[in-house]
Length: 198
Image (cartoon, rainbow, N blue to C red; front, side):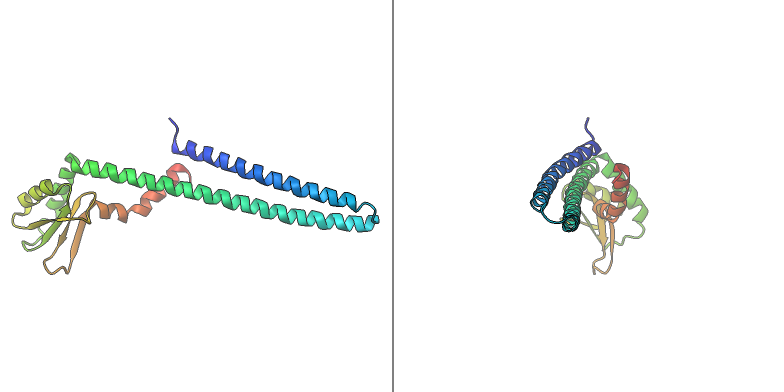
């Protein structure tokens, strides 16, 4: 099975070969033009010829450096774009997996454990928001633990979990899986980069 690393290495190799090939042709063209000009100027004295040669070599080196810098920048931009696509794909897959797991037994376990930890903090007039996808299941679990609390569907909760909001909306306790994932996004991204050697 081809890994993400293999795909990236293959992609880097193809990009670098394409870029090098196109710039080598341009360098050959410049070299050819330089040689042609030098041959036309053979009649000049050796001192003038040497100065001319140095000038053209200097210009050639500057042009070569610009071409190499441009090629390197283009390659880095392409690799950065591909890395970003991979990260987005990874997080999309991760969210789908978390959402599927939450809809199953893991979601029930999660909501029961968290409710058990916070039940003494919840007041009867607080409102608890849950996701549309698991509304019926989560509502039943919440009302079994907290009895008279209102449970409302929320479009903001995509992956699962719940939010507790007081009736005056002066505080919000967020136990959403979405919030935890976004809160730890940079940490996860850093670990992913380290794992993939980026």
